[in-house]
Image 1: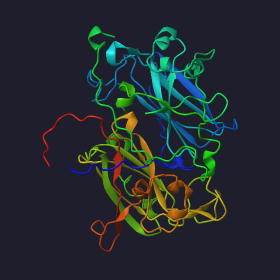
Image 2 (image 1 turned 60 degrees about the vertical axis):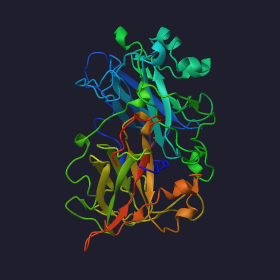
Image 3 (image 1 turned 30 degrees about the vertical axis):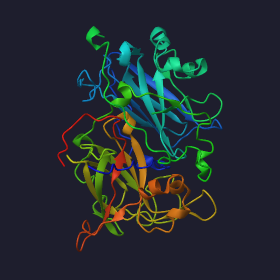
Image 4 (image 1 turned 180 degrees about the vertical axis):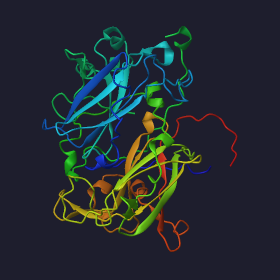
Length: 189
Length: 244
């Protein structure tokens, strides 16, 4: 192998991603009725506060033990029947998306640190020339969040924006604001 | 968490793309970016376990005929039949096997089968414009379709999108996820298109354009195009004997 091939540029998903990207089982990482299942909902809005009705939100996460069904997990891949670590949900006319999943376990990081339970999030939409990446953290993990190696690099206001809000029925809400007031912190990988 | 996992050796991270590869999120020529691109700088996220792993799909997400967009609802789609093939690679030149590619496109007249597409070009009852394929053991993929038409859009006066096919690609890690568009060679609309032009590096932009591939052209049947897709490679690669 002499020349390394150069990476392919990103382009927007455009307004018609619904032709193929939504899956009937996309929002469900676990089946309804699974013990410990949690609903995560949110609203995708633009810089004018208007809902983004043609977007797609994807999540990727560890299982309840903090393990991945993936060959590069140094502890070995862990298959967990009834759980798929990936979910995707198109936004509706109100910009809303939802997932049914379980809270992931904490993750080991380099240097003996622990990452607090979190979900990685990708946001796609017309007008986004590349995906946006963010993370969802859990409101019932104040101690783990306080020592999380990613959250601790952020300003207080950004840390708060990455923690989902618990609603009275146990649903977690994580709104994504693409631009302006309350803009969601996004990451470069 | 068992104690033997407390000190963990992460796999190598993925290298960033060279500057100029990806469009800036705020690209004023593309009007929809104005209210949808963040105003604040992105925070750098060092790749850890969640970023170094990712969903692995296989044959469960494709089915018979999902690699042939020319037959829908019991009939044949109208238009120029094409075969699109190529390899999914990482930037170390390694094929990415068993990866899911999802495709969508307009029909030969430039119309999408989507309620939001209102421009008065005909729908084709035998074309729905959606496909799925999985790469083979060496990262190769292939599907059959119809050459999509160009279509007008409201971005600026007399704006037309060049013919294109949308690709959604899962590599092997969250970090490698890519959505892009493939264009056709010698299309005069490409240099006028703010979405294609949003890619800063002209050489990178060129990589979005498929090549005509006469070897892939099927006699008496379909024109062949080649489109390789390159995802980020690893920061450091494990030492291996070069078998090439």
